[in-house]
Image (tube, rainbow, N blue to C red; front, side, top):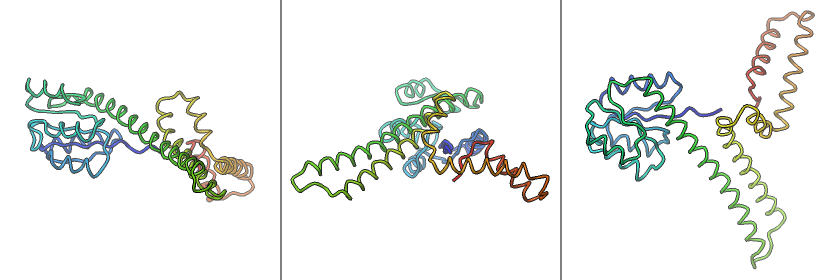
Length: 249
């Protein structure tokens, strides 16, 4: 299951801050709120966010210090600036910074949602790529260490050590495939996504899926002979799981 994208809203106007957060939560995003630039930086240190929505005229960002800090220490994090007092100076400065959009209050919601959705897609795609790259880098590191050990003067590693390293590498590869799956499902067509899903499905999951299908079939065939509310509910639950395509665990 893909984790909901997270948005940090930094604005010292409580009504705007909380209302905007509630609207974005209705669209499936997870939102945290802060009232100043300094607390926004602390929140960014404590947790990973996919988008920052920040007011300009609030403590800690009147001169766009918050955005400057994001550019230096959190590259790749998109920022949407909002302001109730737009100015030529702040608009020009925002163009020179990693600002995805410069919007004025009151927000035109359709436009705001479009900017948010676009930023989230770009940010989460970048994050998925980075996470997958780190996983595969860990796999490469393990294999390079094994190769170095086999080429060293201290003697070849034992078969147990080779097996342990190979097992760790295999686990890293599988983790890498799991991290790429959501990205593939987002960007690929249905046919390609289904092919990747098949690669990631273990024999145990296939067996459980087949067992569920057989159980539903058996319950359907015998429901006239064994009338039971509990069996009927079980059949309905299994059928619902199969229709949703949930993989059993």
